[in-house]
Image 1 (cartoon, rainbow, N blue to C red):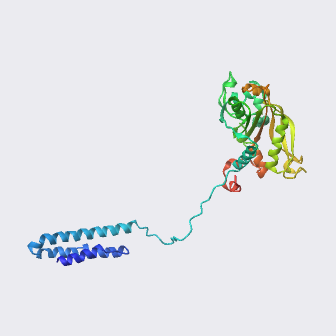
Image 2: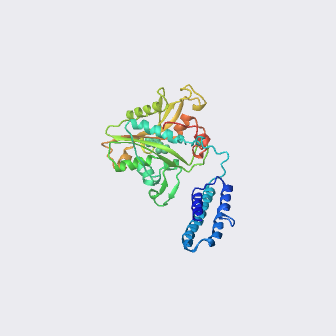
Image 3: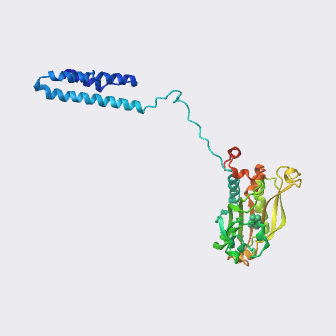
Length: 344
Ligand code: DAH
């Protein structure tokens, strides 16, 4: 009987099953009522008394091993995903759709690069700002009508003293004030960022948009320097054939002030519907920093002078990519966004 048990132990040790039916057959063979283990149990009473202990232990070992092996095989089947039809392990992986940069980021990065090559570094400031940095230090007196030109969103408004208002910045010129306040010249910075105005949303206006402010303050900075830097920018951005034109304008923080047009890059200045047949399109505001602004920011206007300019990133992007509707930039329609692939 011992030899028979040893033989079965070996068998059970190495048993395998290819599927659930085979496994059930094994269970029946060894562990069912009429199975091999039970048959041996029935024979046990015929074992001579002096061998009972040894045979009993072996028999128990066989029973336990058979139960363990069958349970282990069953578990392996249960964990297997049996639904393998149509599974092709040699198929290449699904392609991962890489996103593209937002058109406004592409253009912003390009502008930063162009001015970076001319020695401008980046300065940043908060979007929730105080009235002092957005208006007062930039020469907008408390009752200055130019405050109404920019439809302001108020976070905290103070009826008695407007200079205590907390607002969403309406232009990145606020970063000029912040930079001059904490740094003495030479200053040469550009300030990219988001700005907010309380405007009805349409294809040509939005309640938030993006600007880049430029500021250069040093000894003997002149209007000629401003013109040269802006010409360089326009030609790098829109091509070497681009011409610029400066028209007198008004901003409280610059004197003199100007608006800059570039020759229409669609018709080359001939006149077309895009430039309303003028041959020119407006791209930015600029001027010499008003001495009153330098003084308000702690820079001695008798020693230093400076120029500033401010441009709209949406405006430049519209011109460059001919996007007619501003709202496209914030709708996150991937069919639109996928059109822009670039190294920037
Ligand atoms: N802050 C002006 C605006 O939002 C743009 C601007 C004009 C900025 C002239 C300047 C500047 O620095 O010199 O409309």
